[in-house]
Image (cartoon, rainbow, N blue to C red):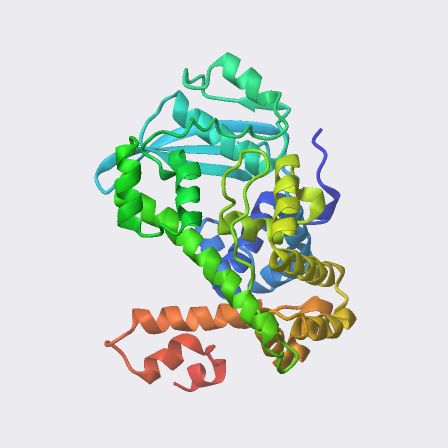
Length: 392
């Protein structure tokens, strides 16, 4: 005897059909009658009123389940598989990982089907999920290897890539010499390139110029900060520019990219791994702008998660007087539509129905572009009136 989910009790149709109908209605710009026609094409006779009732009853439950999974709580049983795809006439391999509930965890496209590609997929999986699975099922491809799978299952987080030692092709190999020349006043790129060329540098001049450009920006930033400190503030905001000095990873010593810093700025402390927490601490110590932005991001995250719009007005005031021009500009724009933002935080409704009808109208217009007029568009868009149909 099979035990049915109590959520679907007293429903005549199976759970799979109900879930598919609700998914069609919310996922695509379809009307209730369109969903009714699509189900009827598959032999499922359901009225559009039934689809509306299903959407009202199960839509919120499905959305909460998707939100729960999107927060990182996926299944602990992973299935790994690969398939051949053709991109611009060339063969590629699509690596995919799903959990026991068919929720896609990671997708990766590689040009080869070997152990290196399999390890890259595993590295992305562990970095994204931040925890190992209980069971891992593969298609017995030799690229995975039993020893490799056993080793990856023991990792809590993906290990950092082993970066090779600096080579003479990189200008950082001569960083000490370049730093001393920079302090002595020798800052011409051609002269420095000629000097390190005699010391064994085998890289290009463009690589050296990229390194020197970061040093020039850092010096220009310090000059702007000195001018900003000397000038008076106006409109409640200081003219001080954000501190864009590069910050290094305390573990590897490499520079933290802006993309990684932006990701860590909005990630809560409880979801950070040990290495990510170290990077956040380093960014806070090296950049006052990052510390301020992270505090504002965590506050606004709490407002939206807690659905408490009463604190939004205070957040906007603090953002305007934070001393960061771009954050103050965003807060002023947010205040113009404060009523709409508060309604989005407090109320459970959304404008998905209206957006769906707008997308449907755009789809019909593009299909008829250049071949029909407003009469046909009105006939296809507006509902049929039975009185007019009988009179005609």
